[in-house]
Structure formats: structure tokens, C-alpha cells
Length: 219
Ligand SMILES: Cc1ncsc1CCOP(=O)(O)O
Ligand SMILES: C=C1C=NC(C)=NC1=N
Ligand SMILES: [Mg+2]
Image 1 (spheres, helix red, strand yellow):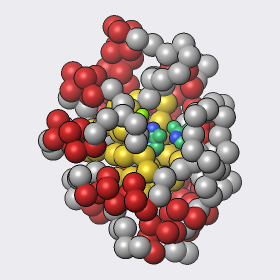
Image 2: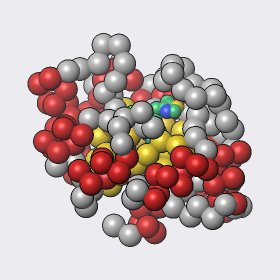
Image 3: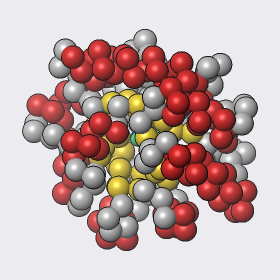
Image 4: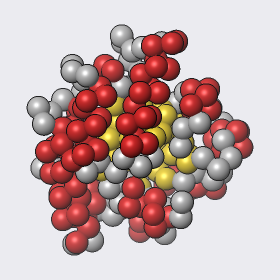
């Protein structure tokens, strides 16, 4: 997939694991994709998350939903699971291992990296990352061990320093603030709660998409 197509897929980047939704994860994902989510990341992490067979089973079920909507299915952190399912890609953080090693280990797959500053962004792209996750943009209760809340500043700084790779902002993002993230230069937004905990995940995804497009108009 070329960079232009990948930037299109970054618009509404939905992330979820079993601990992020009180109802049926498959149903929430189906609705999110119906509503316009453009990419999905399976992130099964934190207290009470699934392990072993039940983890793999849920991942397979969610991968099937993504296939039906022709939406990329990305796995967070777990390279074994990604390989086992032949998923479309892997997302890793700064502490998930040597980025160059990880890049070599998954040839032809999408590799996303969480970055927090220009140095980390340059390194990730040098080793061959396909897209960058930048945040936390706003305060979030979903991930407790985040770096300090950064606002739009890092997104702007990356763009001003010639980083034109696909970028998603992440952290406390909803339809009410997503336009600011794309106005600052991101290609889209990555969200957990705004969709996974919404009564109507399809409406939530659609509102996010509209907010993302609005921000793009003015950047
Ligand atoms: C995984 C992650 N990385 C930085 S903030 C965050 C959590 C985002 O969750 P939410 O969209 O519910 O704020
Ligand atoms: C921490 C993260 C940052 N960015 C993205 C896209 N996913 C993540 N899990
Ligand atoms: Mg990680």
C-alpha cells in the first residue's frame, strides 16, 4: 500500500481490546466499521485482558470482521500473534524492542511506532516504520503509563521538520476535538474510548470522520 493510501486509512484509526468495551467486542467493531472507521488495531492489554487461546480466538473473530469491510487489521505489541494470524501489521512502542529487529522480522507488513518527539520519529522512520502514533494529545484514562500530555505541539513540530509520513494523534480524542488534531497536521486520529464506550459506535465513528475531514480542510 503506498503512502497516499495509508494516509487515507489513518483517518479514523479504531483501537480496542476486550477490556475497553462492556458489550460484545465483535458487535462494537462491526458498528465502528459500518460508521466509517478506516483501520483497526487489536490491543489486548491491561488488567483482566485475555491470554492464550481466548486471546487468539477474539483476535481471529475481529480479524474476520475487518476482512468483511476490507479494513487493515493491526496487532499491538504481540508479534507472535501477528504472525500466527498473518495480520496486516504490528504497532509497537519505544519499549517494545529494537525497532530495526522488529522491522526485519515482519517484511511486507505495516509497522506503526509510538513516538513522542522528533528524535524518536526520525529513528522510527529511518528503520522503516510505515506510520507514527503521536500522543497523548489530551489527557486519557485509558492508558495509565503515558508520557506527559503534549497537545498538538509535537505533530506541528514533526511536520515543520519535514516529516511527511502518515501520522495519527492519540490520547483523549473525540469528535469534539479531533478536527484540531488534523488541523495541526495529523492524517487522522486513533481512538479507544470515544468509539468502544459509545452507545452507538457507528455514530461515534461517523462523527469522528466528519471532524477529521473538517480539520484537514484547513491545514
Ligand atoms: C494507547 C494510548 N497511547 C497513548 S494514549 C492511549 C490511550 C488512548 O485511549 P483513548 O482514546 O480512550 O484516550
Ligand atoms: C500507543 C499507541 C499509539 N499509537 C497507536 C496508533 N497505537 C497505540 N497503541
Ligand atoms: Mg507497546
